[in-house]
Image (cartoon, rainbow, N blue to C red; front, side, top):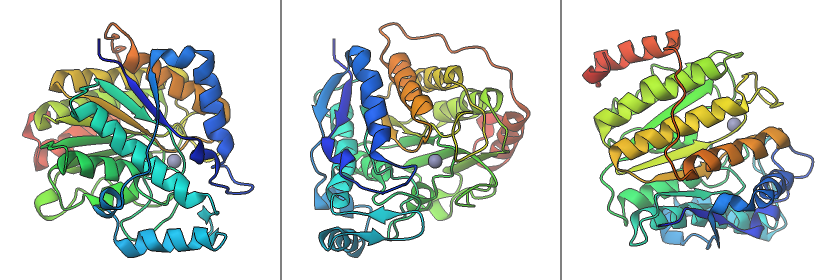
Length: 341
Ligand SMILES: [Zn+2]
């Protein structure tokens, strides 16, 4: 049986952010929890550094050069939230490289059914030409671009369930129909983007699906939006690859946001995404984003890998169709997705 692949690299600990919620302790907490579970049987590999070619398929050279130069001269602040230290450029290259190696394991000759890239810094706020929101390089965007470029995928679906809108990924693929970007995020909240009315533009119109939820939202909203909106979208879109921008900061214990998702909620969302990938005959890749309560983060990653890696396909828990899911389906059916009506 083809194994499930977990990409990691110790350089994730060398991105020194000082007193900051996005700290090396996040990776240590995840790895401690997974090692106690014998890594859930996933095949652990060291991530290579991403090639300049893969990174620059998403980011202009000047963006990459700027981060490299700042790290080389000892680091500094890019904005109030986003720090570069001497180890940050190497950490960012391996975070992007892990995401690319994940895609190669999924779409290459190995044909792994699922893989995960567990690194920091996270990536989904990084725009093509701007680091922001703790993010330097957009790891999931680099992975998706590698998939539709070198790896020959026709269509990639990204589900971003981090509590913050993945504005970087949103913008990078806004005008494209070969990457369907779906984001569930608290609104209003940093970075202030991701309104339901942002549906992409040009050839990409309809291929950006923003699903904002109010603060206080929990399993009922998040799980229903995955199961009753994103899963039917995947049936209509027929992706060759499904990627999760997997943040765990919608958890009730998270200090940076106000949603109340539980460990079971992450399990249910994971089961729903696994089911949608299997329906599409597509492999599933998981790219770590945020999550700032160390316990909730470590448990959330373990729950996701447990559900995605289970030998038997887990049942998707039955969840009522949430009012936000009804509204989203009506909106999408009027625009580009008549099948969702
Ligand atoms: Zn976040």
